[in-house]
Image (tube, rainbow, N blue to C red; front, side, top):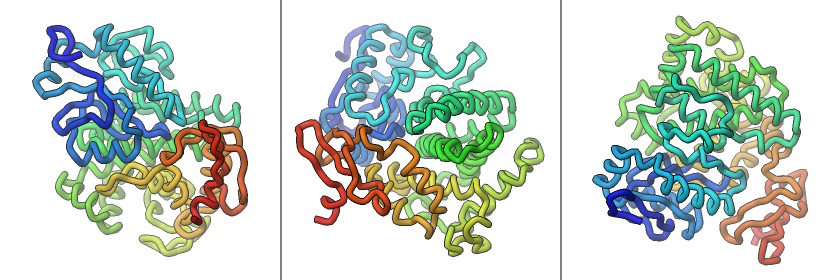
Length: 403
């Protein structure tokens, strides 16, 4: 379906993608985190990243050229019924692979006006909603459904309320909203990273039974740490991505940025937020920066956000790589338990979420989709379950790793 008067796009499989094409919807990893943002022009490196994370048969809707993409936008084809139906089919095919089911809302252009597909949005979306960072939060799949990874129904219910409260706080504070909007205008990779990290942090905070106010403060802290990077020249930021710049350079950037904002945003003067910011680079074993704090003396928000950032950076290929698959990233988190990260927070992330629970669905790229049926050593290796796959084969991932 392309090059007709009304239809300016076509549906392809990942294995058919070529550089120069424009992806008309976001592409998501199997753990529900965004991999590639909407309307991204494909390069060889981006295609390599997509191929690394998803099977080659996964569908993608693209515009062949920039000219066709511009016609697609100018003609508001993102509201075209034929396009929406094709998008529905694509979402359905995605969900055969996803650990966390995706909703069509997560694939739509934020300007689309379809009440029937927007009715499952977490809160009302009115005419005052701007096309800014907040609009991404409204539609972002992990933010929409991170409670699916919580084991308690009570926590799932609390998650929905916390989400709404966070959105109201951002919407009602023009200084905060404007600061976050800089992320959207800066770099796609930072936009994606910020929402993914905040969603993971909230999941951990809910399991820790933080109050609603504390959870909102936690989310704002995580978001502003990323927003501070927009104060770096883009070439400096690119160097940081390529070489993982020295901690003290970035530390001074985000501490100064948030200190300046605290003059206009009262909540940033709270002790929990202050220590969430200044302790972000501290390590649980005392080897971190800037003061070598150790253990529980490190601010709780910092202990949560640093682990969430680490996982998201590894899976997302934040530092100019294709990234690691979710299971491998969780393994790296586990290996840094009591070294870089608070062991209690690592345990919560792995044991008390639904990442690895008997009966839960799991996708192992080498084998496909399966169901967790048990563990050989849940105490020391809760991230290495025994999985029965759809073809009937059963694999002990702990033993498979050793071979």
